[in-house]
Amino acid sequence: MDLHQQQQFGFFLQTATERYVARLEERFRGADGALTNLHADPNAEGVWLDGFTGAVFEDFLLNNAAGACFVLQALPKRSLEGVVPGTVEETLIEMAKKLFAELLLQKTIESLEQHSGYQSV
Image (tube, rainbow, N blue to C red; front, side, top):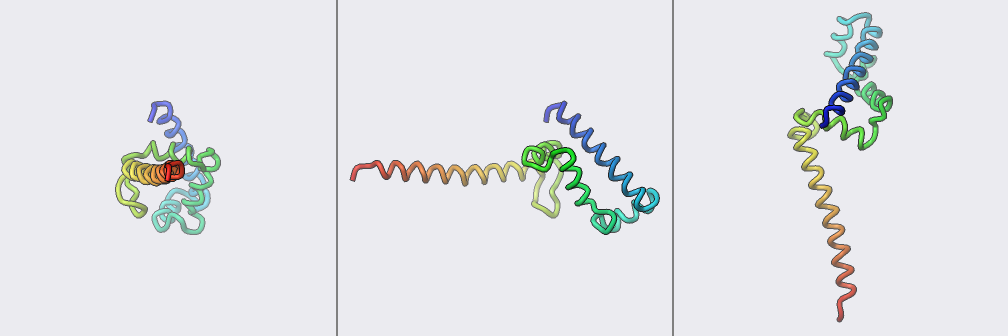
């Protein structure tokens, strides 16, 4: 990831964190109540981590493939525990290989079918 992208990601993370902290502190009347509720269940009523994440992705126009890649590029060594085994980087490489292999297979079949149709009998 280029330095300017790292800086942009840092700004995005800092801004999102500040907004989320402010909402939680307001909703739970201070940091102690916010921490208690956040530790109990990050997606409980009033905490809504996943909902906030979705909203902030929309606000920063990251709710698309390029935006997802931007975020994942910034986190290549983080583990995707509970989602898939391995790091983000390993998972992305495997996904890219699998999708490319499927596309290569499709295009190879199409090409061979064309060649087969043109061969003399």
